[in-house]
Amino acid sequence: MDNPPNIPNIVPEPQRCVSRMYHISSFNMTRLKDIVATNSGIVQNPTRVEVATALLHKCGVAASKANPGVFKPTMLIHLMNLRPPIPLNTIGNATCHYGTMSVSEDDINLTNYVARLQKAKQKLRDELKGMNTNQLAADELKRIKQGADILKRDIFDVYSCNSLCNRDLHKHVDFGWGRPARLSVARYSMKNHFLFMDERTGDRINVVVTLTEADMSIFQNNEELLEFASPVGSVPRIS
Figure 1 (cartoon, rainbow, N blue to C red):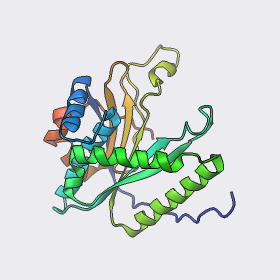
Figure 2: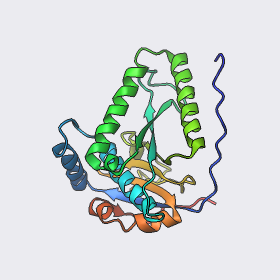
Figure 3: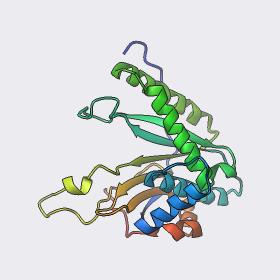
Figure 4: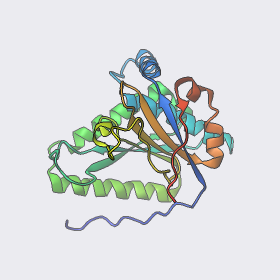
């Protein structure tokens, strides 16, 4: 690639983080979707990951705000699969980043956030339409640099999320003992991260939430979180 952008090396301060897994049942997922769709005139067919992201982000921000007592603007970084527009058999992490920013507490309202999330995703799809592989790579490097520049300024509390849903992982993971009853991951070392995974059957979803110890102690007692999500065991540690 000619003249790739110079991306600054951003190394976050080391902090003690805790990972917890939460389960959202099909019933509660339907409730969340209904709340978002009913309270909005523009949100159409919200997905599981969209409504779950909005819920967890809201509860994460509430936990972060509780420590200093002041709301800080947030940026949530999302990953979008680039297959398509690139071929489905492309090898590697063919993804593109995009972000949604919340500068007021009204922005993190479930309905408002899902509406802005859908708008940001559609904007990205429109921008990528018609690009060839080289153009997509250059565009992603540009987005990474823009994100790194924002991180360097330390204006936002930064969250990130990734989804492994709709990948049929339960069908493909088999170490000789049959299909697993549940999938998990090693604890994630980056704070403010959400990783979504399908349950084995139905429309249920699991999410591994990683926060600082201080924020997790507040997050895990959030009444709105516990209304829709249930804690699940522990996330395995790899030493």
